[in-house]
Structure formats: structure tokens, C-alpha cells
Image (cartoon, rainbow, N blue to C red; front, side, top):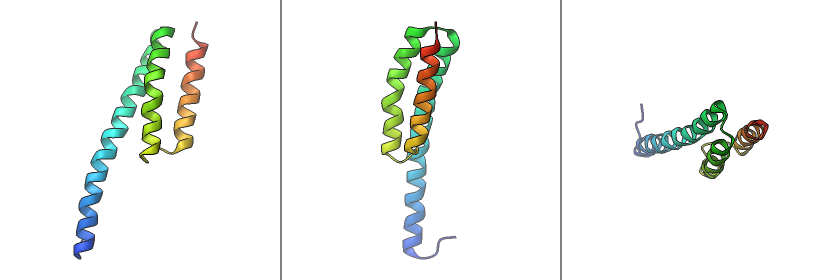
Length: 87
């Protein structure tokens, strides 16, 4: 348990950051799921549109420190190749 004033403040800050990061991660996962669903339905136009919406969200997550840069790049690469492979 935090005892000093500084450690109590750090605990409060960590809780707030955790909530913000959790919301960001959830939002990004929603965009990723939309792309996955569009790929699963076989609709190339919808998949491309969803991918175009997803990319800035992913990169924003990188700049905010939620995801590592290579993780986001890997996700975008795999999704874009799957969209490209659609009919």
C-alpha cells in the first residue's frame, strides 16, 4: 500500500492513465474488429473503408504509448494483405 504522499499521488495518476489507456485500447480493438468483420463478409470495398478508418486510430495509439510501433505496423500489414487478397 502506498504510504508517502508522493506514492499516493503516483497511484492516483496510474489509475487515471490506466482508465484512459484502457479506453484507447478498446476503441482501437473496435476498429480492428470492424475490419475483421468486413473481411469475413467478403466485401472488399467495406474492408478497404474500414482499414482506412482503422489506420489513424492504430497510429494514434502508438503515439499515445498504448501500442508499440512495430505491433501496429504488423497489424496494419497483416490486415492490408488480407484485404488485398479479397476477390
